[in-house]
Image 1 (cartoon, rainbow, N blue to C red):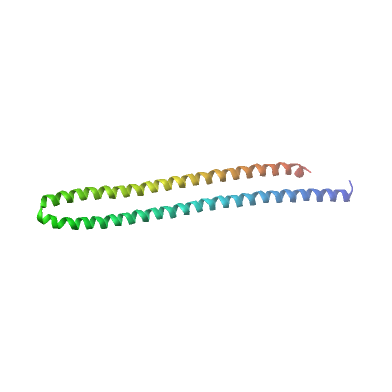
Image 2 (cartoon, rainbow, N blue to C red):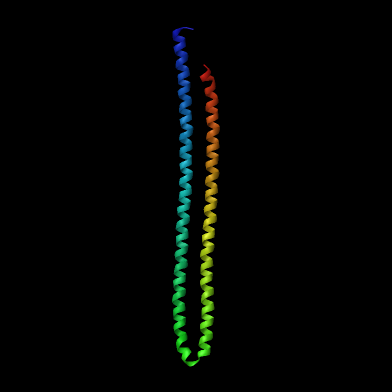
Length: 157
């Protein structure tokens, strides 16, 4: 082979190496972009769930405040009766205490159920992100093996 042919072959091999290098960089750029997208989607879903949870908690707190105000009013109406009929006032106070406690427990249960639902939605979002990131990295690994396999003949030359 002449010097010109050897230089041409070297140029061709260098071009192929450059092409494979560019392809490898493209694979990793795609992985970075997809990974970032999946992480941002998870972050967005987490933020949405946090906002939803905050709204639900605020609603429960407003309901608790309304219950507290209503209970205060009901207790105030018991006192005049206590002077006239202490036994009936005691019975109403006991009933009010039991009813109020049940209402507060119902609101607390609602808050706990909301938290449980939020955690379940976040768990699904994290599972989705884990699955899609795993798929992304498996695909990138497969693509990189292909690039590496195509570089073997070039390294031998």
